[in-house]
Amino acid sequence: MSKVVYKKVVATVSAAILAFSLSACGGGSQETGSSNNSSSPAPAPASSPASSGGGGSEAPLIVKFSHVGTPDSPKGQGADKFKEVLEAKSGGKIKVEVFPSSQLYGDNEEQEQLLAGNVQIINPSMTKLVKFNPSFQIVDMPFLFKSEEAFYKFWDSEMGEKMFAKIEPNGFKSLGVWGGGAKSFTNNKRPLITPEDFKGLKFRIQAGKVLEAQFKYLNASGVTIPFSEVYTALQQGTVDGQENMMNNIDTQKYVEVQKYLTLSEHGRLDYAVLTSKMWWDTLTADQQTMIQEAMDEATAFERSIAKGLSDGSFKKFKDEGRYEIYEMTEADKDKFREALKPMYDEFTPLIGQEFIDYARTLE
Ligand code: LMR
Image (cartoon, rainbow, N blue to C red; front, top):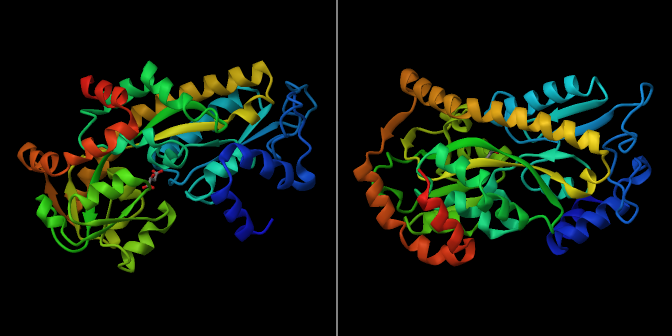
């Protein structure tokens, strides 16, 4: 299937149908992995005997894990930890291949490729799930989550489960929630201190109407650009600035192409670790247990390092002095809370009143 035709299919067919049709026609002769679910198409070449449970002489089950971060980002280190733990736990019967930095799939294709069976695990930022369900944009509601702890409490609660249940019909299965960090702004035009400073500026956004509106209410604009293309877009002036968590700002080397950094912590950037239900159902109970246990260990590890990595990046920026840095005070943030208040009227019905109300209760 040519890339152009493929993209058209992705754009026009629902994800569930897409998962079926792509895996039915896209995997070609490699698509011989056994499946214990005869009503589903077999996933593409994830594994050799995926459902066998593995005897000594059998080829290992291959699990491809694709992500868009660098290996030293929290999600990169979390993926490597998962590989280390699962390979040890399975005694070599499961092999994990990690593809960082959008090497295998980027923002525009990783979710569809997961559903098509061409990769087995991805960890996109929550925002990017907007094309399957708008509620995930809760992470972008301004100043909603009061702390990193509040964020984890939300996703580890029944509300978090309820949110993930919304994308199960699309074929996703959640394996965990990982931390990224609070988002801050960089740009090339001027220090961003008040809402008025944003006027007329163009920012890269990850995806979705909520982020578009955030910049609209600041009299700026937002344009969706895949993560792997942000550096070039900033360098070439396609956009003036971007928002991200501190460790991404660091590991993507935006300092080379941006002048001003504002510590605003106005929203969250965190990750849903996902597999496809179709692939999961081909695994034996033993394989599922090992994978989930290894993921739980990787999740605990990733969460334990995420904030420290971003704090370290910010300290480095201050020490190096390459950015002109502004750290927002609570009084500054209040002005943004006021300017962005209409977002709550506009998007609470779309995201879900109960989710917003619950997030507000968390400290
Ligand atoms: C982004 O697109 O800015 C982030 O979602 C990248 C990431 O950390 O996954």
